[in-house]
Length: 57
Image 1 (cartoon, rainbow, N blue to C red):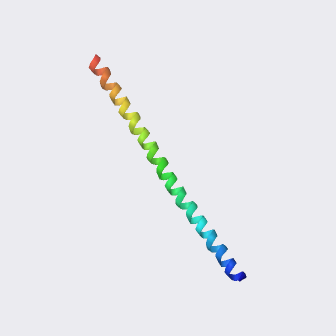
Image 2 (cartoon, helix red, strand yellow):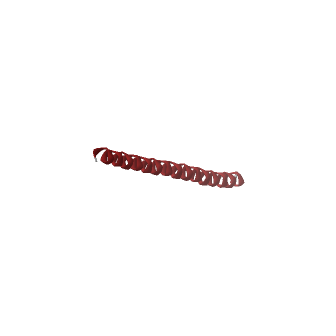
Image 3 (cartoon, rainbow, N blue to C red):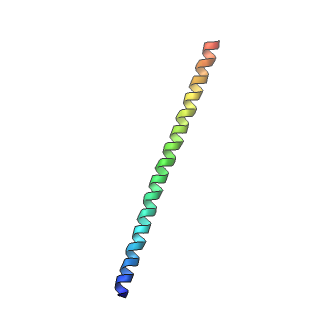
């Protein structure tokens, strides 16, 4: 029984590490996507503002 518990603890530890790694990868990917979309929005607003200034001149 002790061997089984020891084996289960090892598997449990590995699973927790894998789940943590997967969560970290997904979190990093989402953070990158949000940052990129913010950059696109900033560039679009700047372009729109530039076009509006040129039309007024």
